[in-house]
Each structure stands twice: as C-alpha cells, then as structure tokens.
Length: 157
Image 1 (tube, rainbow, N blue to C red):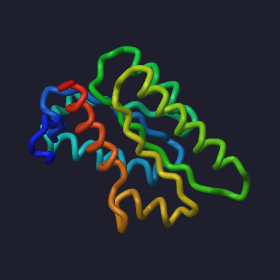
Image 2: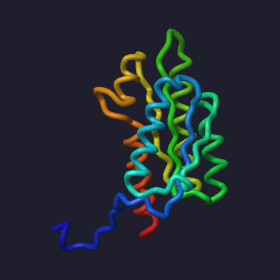
Image 3: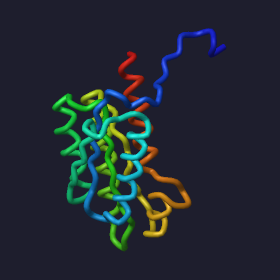
Image 4: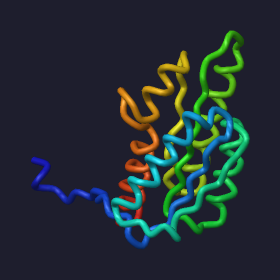
C-alpha cells in the first residue's frame, strides 16, 4: 500500500546545507566525542567544513537560549545540540533534563528548524561514555543524522 501513495522522505546528503552545533563545556570529556562524531558524520555526507559552525556554552541549561538565537537568524538548515547530564545525588538532574528537553523542542516548533537532541541523560558516567562513542554508539552521530534527514524533509514540504 505504501508504494501506491506519494511519500516524502529525506535523504542523507548534506552538500550545500549549513548546520550549527551547540555543545556544552560541562562534561566535555564526553561531549567532545559526540561533537567529533557529529562533525565527521556531516562531512562524510557532503557538508563543507565552512558550512559548519560550533558554538560552546557552559552547560546544558544554556542550550535552549543559544539554539533559539541561532534559529531566529534563519541561517542554518539544522541545529545540533550536544550535552551530557549525569545524575547526581540531588534532584538537579531532573530539573535540568526536563527544562532542556522542553526548551529545545519549543525552539524547533516555534522556528520550524530541526533541532537535534544530542543530550545524554544518564545515571552514571559509564553510561555517558558508552553513549558517546563506545558500546552504545555515538549519540552525536545519531543527532546529526536526524537533523540532516529532517532538514531534507522540511525542504521538500
């Protein structure tokens, strides 16, 4: 049945597209691996290095406001947010993770720009390391892939 209807899909070609990556300095020993993975993915899929911009922010809580400012500029085809929120012994984890998630989703909806959610929310440092390029893949690569494909879908609509 699917082959009988008009289907719109994105393709994984980044040539001619501009992307911003907004990454946290907090937990940078984990986040930098996701940044490198995302950059490598985009370049391997045709993005020119001059079409990629990396912005560093102090922590995950600062991501939404910076991503919003970038979205307002209408300069980028997609924005990839990268950070690591690791649970501690206080409720701080829940507050930060919740607000960052809501903030990034709201920016994407308000400005119709894909915002990649490359924010690790883990219980332990070991889980974060696993998701930043070892056993569990690289969530930076996954966020870049999602933004690339979504930007292509939006360009077709």
